[in-house]
Length: 307
Image (cartoon, rainbow, N blue to C red; front, side, top):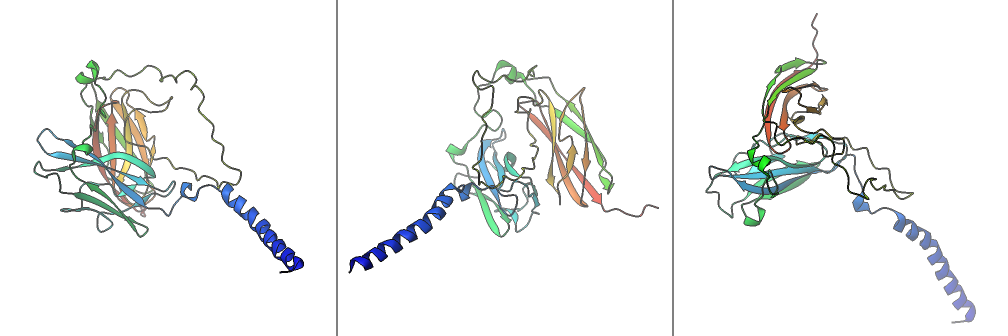
């Protein structure tokens, strides 16, 4: 090969490398595609979170779910796309799925003779993808669903769960709203903190995370109010609270507010609907440790000519 030809070959190779290099550098600067956050179009992953023994010898299997979307909520009616197997497909699971993760959302009771190899499977099909949670009684999966293995204090040992009743209408006509008036009784334990928990020394200011310059904008997360407990944030409610969620229904419901401090044994909120249909609204009273829940069935009718 002549010197001139060799020079042309090396020049061509160098030009090719320089042409590809900017694209490679740009690719390396892009965020990990597996770290993308999606507004919609993703599926829902059911989760088996463990089992616990009941006083009568039966077992409670606890389930939650992860809606991988940050904005899209969805209804998945009980049936081929939302079912338990074996046995009855309806085990009280939700049919309306709020965004992101919901831990120990419900439990399914199985008999004492269930055995250690028999499985209970919850399947969800969303956007053509089927995900499953497989539950079985294996020793390593036994959990403490209330205290999480924490050591109980003398006050905790005396604590009794709250009790609640709900007074509301069972039928409304759009655009009417629904008033949910709950009466909640509790023993006042555990004693609520009088002020928010103070951060540890050196942790007074939370970290600030800055995205890469070319990182896609993170979608707005439409918050779903969990049914549990006191506010976990520094300014969250302390003591006895009542939370509302849509358990079953064709669309999201706006609760104003969704989490209420119980005052003088009462907690009132207003539910606003956007779509007619049959709904199950779940209210959960929580004293910080123990809970009581009530389901309210509501028929929402389309607007009609009242005159």
